[in-house]
Length: 117
Image 1 (cartoon, rainbow, N blue to C red):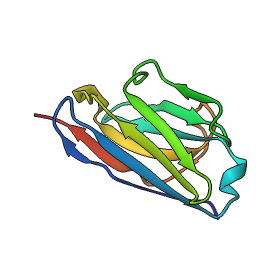
Image 2: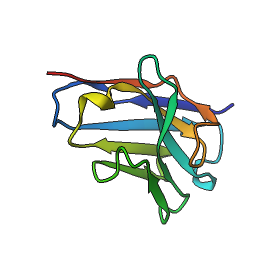
Image 3: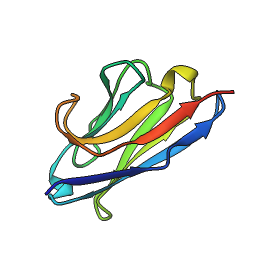
Image 4: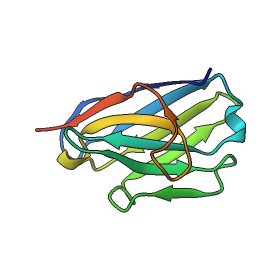
């Protein structure tokens, strides 16, 4: 059974930073591209970033490009998302997902990121 458990969210001021983590189990993590997706209150799921199995191919949504960094550690079955220069519009529930450049796929319960002064 695929399990994805996110952590690292919280309340941060505009311009601040957070690092999200995702612990994966129940599948061969090193064999799959992974993604982060987010859902703001009252809005649909939004794809944020994807990373290939070897980290050689990385893609970002235009809304986060230059501010967010996705990474992975296959030895630890872990996925990360570094969030810098946060904006109030980044407030959302962030989910890691067994998906490639889409919101479709298994995802965890999520970790809440709130950007507010």
